Image (cartoon, rainbow, N blue to C red):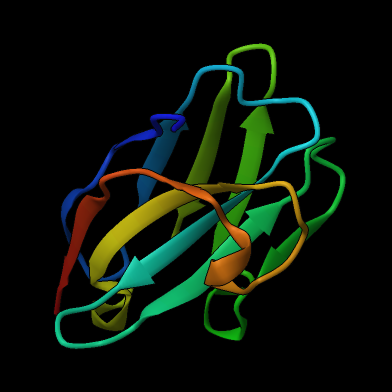
Length: 121
């Protein structure tokens, strides 16, 4: 199983920014990458995804215009730039990899351990 490693989480005030990173070996060819969030007591939800060329992206409605997903295939990394953070963005953010393009968690076969993001009001 491929190991994905997230980093960049932390505590930030509302309105602030964080940049999450996900590193993985052999990240690139033909794999879409996604970010999901799980808040305490809630299901894991889709946040953003990027297909393997980096051209096409998908975002959850609640993060459009605030979050940007990007990837650097040469460095086997994926980033999630999060701006104008809100308390409801709080949760554990997971990076995931998929051979299929989409927003459903079941399409993603490889997952990281997650990084905690806490947004204070």
